[in-house]
Length: 417
Image 1: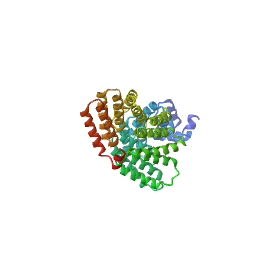
Image 2: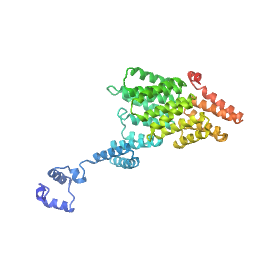
Image 3: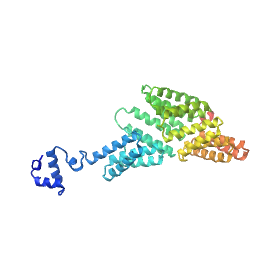
Image 4: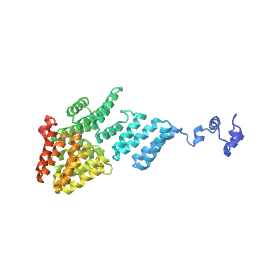
């Protein structure tokens, strides 16, 4: 088209010529007229893209989320950080919130629980996602609260999700069951076993005839976890094996690995280190390179416990130290169990002073997080190590602690203990 052919009333060919020469900046009105004649949008003439700024941010966000799924975390995080600033500055709360959520999920995967909580809470203030549509976001936030020793905030979060979903019309039984199961975990972590069991019973009664294998897996998994925390290892292992059997029919290797980890925890607690070791070998194989920092930490802790039960002090120390380093010596129950295993390993090597410090740290963390059964057992192991080293008075003090924690157990737990 010539300049004359492109010209319109109000946009002379001379005006078009000056635009092409770069001596004139076209007005919005002129851009619209020229764009209409060329059959493109005004945004395309101005920016080279048919997308408006919000659409362009959306495209960048989708590309960054894809890069995350493909494992290119470094490049994706740089893009997401820039996108978050850009969207927030432009007042695009939706895109800013989504970018913030993606950054927070990435922080959680690398074990930065505090960063995940801060990022998700900031994103929620911009635009809170629906607990129906973004279940994984609320699961991550709850787990991050738990890892930081904030189980009460985790409980409140799941209760709020359940209340919100209950007000939405339609059948949301699957999502309700998911959040109830998560709530039962959080309740059991604070020693509220009765409430946890009531939540699970409600879930079971409402999903008694479900043919959803994933739902059954989650229910068996939660029952296994609760049973073990109550000290009923036989029942716990039965439920764990049911979950594993159902998972075998799926291609979900990550959750199969986690189910084997659960079984290893139960077997170590039942003093079956050989059985636990077989479960751990399967878990490690299935994880491949897909394990999160938390997954690896639990794997190392259970490996350390197995080594300690088998009298392999050096290996127990090595694996417990790996777990503690991976969690950056944080403040949660997993770190408490790691210090317990470290104490066992150091005691087996005859390093009673270092073992004493490790046991003390482990017992204090487990008690802090109301893991009364584990706290009582680790205090007994501490007392045995001190007694064997001839430090009788200190051993009696540790036994007193064990008795104190045992008194906090439910009647059924006391029988099992």
